[in-house]
Image (tube, rainbow, N blue to C red):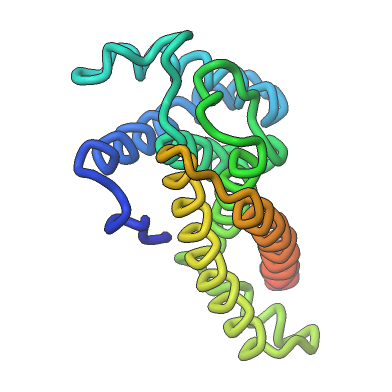
Length: 205
């Protein structure tokens, strides 16, 4: 749905992002089968993810004492929250994610949540007939969706850049705080938009 900021990532980081995305897509459905809240599922997923990352070829150093880098943490948290958007603003941190400030962990989580709640809206008719029947301006809805997607990309860029600075031991607290603020606002906008689209689909049935 969203294009990653590939030009900021090394080939190894791109491979890690794809591996985590596949892992989340595989594990979330089976964890959901126990009907636990997303927050509990996220905590269980993170435990399994730690084992998965330690077992990946080329990353034997990832363990309780050597965390992911800041940029890697952004990628991992974002992918988890895409699959579990109701898990909350920040999944359980643990030692695996200690290589990133709380502000950027939250920013990554809000960004993932925003994408996760919008994901079901794609590939559908967006409840257009139902929304039109209830008096909504679907052109404005399409514009709002485009605006939110664009803003997600902008905020992701800010979050990646701030994480890179933290990895380089040159943290920018102001940029990290602003990334968190923008990401939280986007998650709220995305949730409202997804709810509106859902109402349109309910109206059609």
